[in-house]
Amino acid sequence: MKLTNKFSHIKYLDNIKRFRGIEKTRFNKIRLDANERVSNFSEKFLLNFKRKINSNYLTAYPETEQIYKLLAKNYGMSPKNYFITAGSDIAIRHCFELFVKKGSNIICLDPTFGMYNVYSKIFRAKVTNINFDSKLNLNYSKMINSINKKTSFIIFANPNSPTGTIIESKKIFKIIQKAKKNNCYVIIDEAYFGFYKKSYIKYIKKFNNLIIIRTFSKSLGLAGIRAGYLVSNEKLIEKLYKFRPMYEINSFAVLLIKEIFKNKKEYTNYIEDTIKGKKYLEKQLLKLKLRYYKTFANFILIDFKKPDIQRKVFSYLNSKNILVRLPPEIPACKNYLRFTLGPEKYMKIIIGILKGIIRQ
Image (cartoon, rainbow, N blue to C red; front, side, top):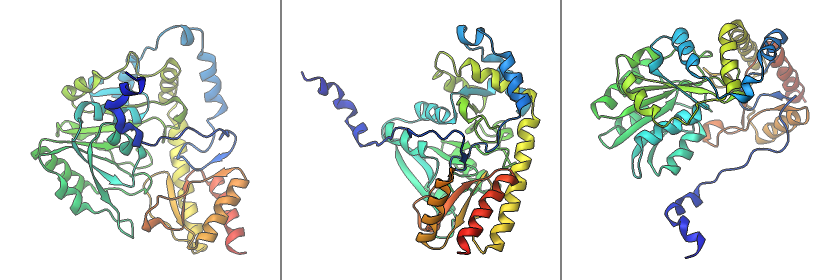
């Protein structure tokens, strides 16, 4: 038997396209393309972290239990309501592992975080995509009407990426309640919590079909450590926990999470500065007569009206080592670019460049 025949049962994977990472470094550039923290951590914070590094963090296995206690202390609930994961994308994977088998039905937004689509294909789920109209309004009626007995779960980021939009609380509760009647789960990805203050963590006590996903990458600024977590009722977390690898995260991630919770101003100040930067940017965009979509996350979609201006802005920023993102390929975002938001000093750089280009 040919070796290739060994893979016949996973032939469907050939249709899943995954691309390798970029070769050029993104370090030491103004990174406004991936919704990471834009400014550096303080020297004091970094020095304190470096001083605490010793051989144990290389030679001993990670001690993660203390992080469960920290999460419970900072966000409420019991440590048993949490499950730490290597990034929120692995948290999403664990939900697929628990709930989805070949042919399972799931509901998600389109466009949204790319890993939902990847895992849907890997686990061969049937997906009902809920789209946005030409003004970036979500088809909520389709979403609520799509929930039925065959649905395994509904998953959505709130705020959503890459649109920055939210689903209002009343609608979310209706989604959860209808899902519960149909014996399915609701997974809310709160990756941008902090920039958006509304959270649904406390409702896991009320709804036993609710799961919350969080990350340390966005408002806490620790994208490099690849850490996130799931929050739900204890029985559901116990089931999800069975998919845990030997250790959830590495020792350096454990140390950094402890440090960030000891130095909360490192991220609370950054959140406040980013919100101020957002307000400054929006005000200046109005002066430049550039439209943008209201956003509840740490990024914004800006309309450059014509494709040649969009390309010119994108290319010029790139030449100045300022990285931004092309928009989602939907009619509502034609000729837009997506910018990560940050403190005002970075937003002033962007406005200065845009003024030069727009007024030419």
